[in-house]
Image (cartoon, rainbow over all chains, first blue to last red; front, side, top):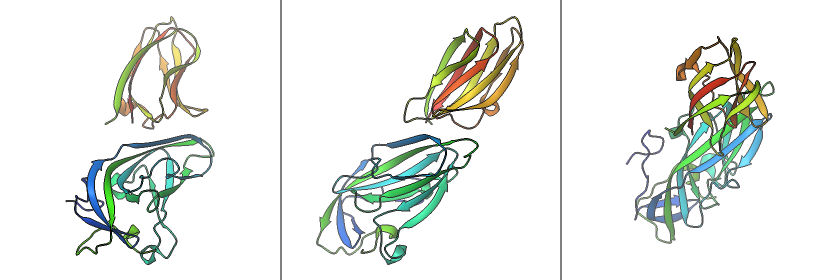
Length: 167
Length: 103
């Protein structure tokens, strides 16, 4: 299995593996491809902010989404991972990264548990405004892990740091 | 790779004509463009990208009477058009073939 940020994009977790998210343990029950998520905005004359959760990029209960973002357009995007918290990501604030069309998708890989942990908040800044309005197209693709919360403490578990820690 | 499609349009009016409207949520890259000038005088043709309500000219061509200009991907604007692509001309008729890729 390739780990996060490798060029090849395969499911990270298999059934009967465990992940720890915000201090809780979850068992992977099933792995499926995720339906592609699409977003487009045109006529951007000034920076705009969106919660991608409100735009549909979230799982239902017991779904852990593992996706990569692809960015198109003359824009710069500040991506904030929300609902993460914990000391590893700077207290109860949020982890942020800046990306644009040149950022490889493998550097924009995220995990979102249902609509509670790891969802994304973005600020899109058009590069060509005010002379010319910008536009932006985002695609998210990846996998869905059906998870089951467990009271057991597994011997080994794995998850990226940004949603690792207890809130 | 995105969804590829081609279309052919006869332009029979001067001024601005829409060539292709991009369906949501896609954007489109122009991959190939061919324009033939059927008028008796040379035509000045402008390719226009539409972004929402904003129109941005991206390419201006001078095409002699009876001439056909074929532009391949590397000669075309590299930016995608998010809403539509249009053409403005001071002569008609023009025969336009284009190939686009939706992503």
